[in-house]
Image 1: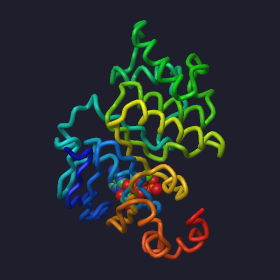
Image 2 (image 1 turned 135 degrees about the vertical axis):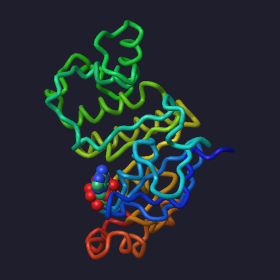
Image 3 (image 1 turned 45 degrees about the horizontal axis):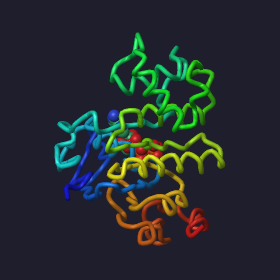
Length: 247
Ligand SMILES: Nc1ncnc2c1ncn2[C@@H]1O[C@H](COP(=O)(O)OP(=O)(O)OP(=O)(O)O)[C@@H](O)[C@H]1O
Ligand SMILES: [Mg+2]
């Protein structure tokens, strides 16, 4: 079986900054990978490389057997880290979701696209805010609208950069259930997600990548979410988090 994601000896440099160094791992179809690591560890850079937005300086990234820059773009969705998005942009939630379908801004929305977008918003639990301007959405609602945008084309690979930040604890549980439903309804769909929450990784992921520029650990959650490896990844700041390991 072809792997969903194959990363081999990947190095990414921005000028004198090495964001990723000699990173290798393979994720099978239907997997759910949680990527963890401290700020600046190269997590977002890795995800952008998977989408083909950033080119490897060295090494290779293959998505379902194809070079990431030549992958079937309809089969991959990317939900970026939201801090980087302008909330003042004058758009309705529905338009944002339809833009995921058309891959351009929807100046006019066909009935068919509206039906598909509304269905995705319903599964993300935000159908009621379809006509709300995005600047009036709560942080949690906006995250779900972006998830709907990511799911609307039924991608085989869903790439999510810290999708649950800003969602309250109850909403967060529901958010991960949405992802589980998505994988249940699309059995070969693969998810790659950055999170800072180790218990989420433990409970929802099939694989964990612990990253700090290099791979600190890759494998199943029980093998990777261990004190020594977390300390290696987070350095001295990991110490206070070790209390949460196993929770
Ligand atoms: N486009 C860019 N140009 C220059 N440097 C960059 C660029 N993107 C990322 N970097 C640098 O690469 C390193 C990794 O950044 P990245 O955003 O991948 O980290 P991260 O693990 O996602 O961090 P965070 O948890 O804060 O989101 C950082 O030192 C960052 O400053
Ligand atoms: Mg990031």
